[in-house]
Each structure stands twice: as structure tokens, then as C-alpha cells.
Image (cartoon, rainbow, N blue to C red; front, side, top):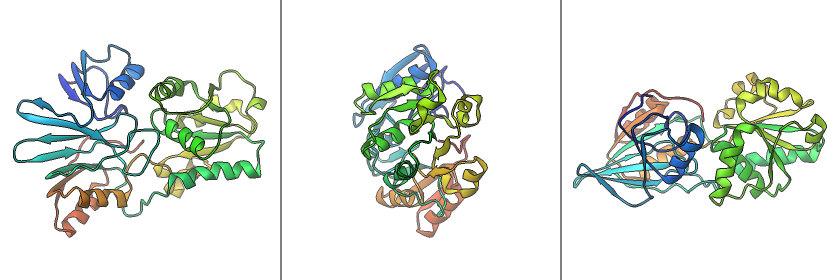
Length: 307
């Protein structure tokens, strides 16, 4: 992903937001997150835009709508007098109390992601997935439970799911997650009491939950814990072989992307006449669209398969 003169950014993940752009247009949450991750001078200038308030650029109206992916994430509607083009960015339609809720936007042309664009991907309710941790505690409350979750978005969602399920003990964090969690708290997301792992002894974490980026699960950082239970929060945990290869004992199928049913429901509900599919399993969703008399084409871009 190259730095450009003018960048419109949907959200703060590294595969969508990078440093070095001359001018950035994004939600205030996304701008704040970029500055936390890349520094205050990561772009030449920033312009924040509120949800639902159109901005006119070269005879086109740009309006941002919540995408439900992470805090500050946005779908972008581009309008002329005769057409409405919607770019979803990364999104999910299921409820999430750690970010702004997704809003359906009707359009003529839809550009949608398809990270989990295969019928096999049917995400369970995250509230049920998080109960796996709590049930494990009931059986053994002396173990340390380490949950692999990405530093931006997924970690905060997992923490919020635990809090909403009634877990009110201190949750311990890898150092890379502290600033983003502090920012979420500053935006009114109640994450409860959080502490850094720091230099505490292994015994201090017995019967505790620790959250760390997935890379730390295989790093020497994790060796400080004595015989931990490894958990991993990701939509990819629905693929049992992935969980097995990563030595995950408690896979948590918690995704910040739409599953197959969410994708096809969105396409039908937004009343689009045409769909471009990108960032994932394009072919299956294109085939579904054409089978349902909706014009569709794959839009191949440099993408990713991580959350």
C-alpha cells in the first residue's frame, strides 16, 4: 500500500491505514488511532469527518456511515445526482458494544469485502464463544488463560465481551495493547480494571486472564507463564486445522468481519444493482450474486487474510 497525496481511510488497521499520506480524511477515532500507532506527524494533514454529514469533493458527495468493524470504522457512500456507490471497507453487521453499530446503507453499486466469503463460514454468537473461557474457569480456576487477540479492535472486543458476561476481575495485557485500550476507555468503552503483565511472577497469574497479540503466544514473552491454557479469538478458528497447528486449546470463533450470511443479507438488503467483491473469497460471492440476478465482478486488490 503506497503513500498518496489524498487518502480517504475507512479504519485504523495497518492494511487500510498507513503513515506517509499527504492529506488524510477519516473519522476522528481513526485519526486518533493512527496517531497512537504511527505518531502525531504520520500524515501531512488530517481532516476529520462525522458520520452522516456529507462532504462535497469535486462535485461528489462523500458520507461516512458506521461499519461495525472496530471503533471509528466507516463505510463510505459516494453520491452523484444519479448514482450511489457504497464502499464497505471491513465491516460486520452483528452487535458489538466495543464500537459504533453497523448501519445499512442503500446504494446502486456496492463494493464489499469478502474475507469470510464462503458458505462454510457461519460465525456463532460471540456471547456464547466467550462463555468457553468462563466455563473453563469453573473447571480449573488455578490455570492462566492467555487469549491471543489483535491489539486493535479484537482485544478490546474480547475484554468487553468478558465484562458483559459478568467477569469483573483484573485482566492483564501485553504492553502493545495498553495505549489502544486506554484510548477506548477515553471514548466511553468500559473495559474494567486492566493491568500490564510487566514483571510479575508466574504465580501472580494463576486463575487470571491474560490477553496478548497472537505473535506473542509463540514468543519468549509467553514463557513467563507456567503451563498456561492457550486461547485464540479469530474468525479463522472455525477452521479446526488452524487451531490445531497453533496449539490452541480453546478456539474462540469471534470475528470482526461478516460471515457468509451477513454478506448475502447485506447485498439483498441494500438493494444494490451491481456488486464488486474484494479482499477475500471473491469467486463464491460473485457466483451467488449472479445466481440471484445481481451483476457482480471480482475486484482484485492487494489484501490480507488476518484481522
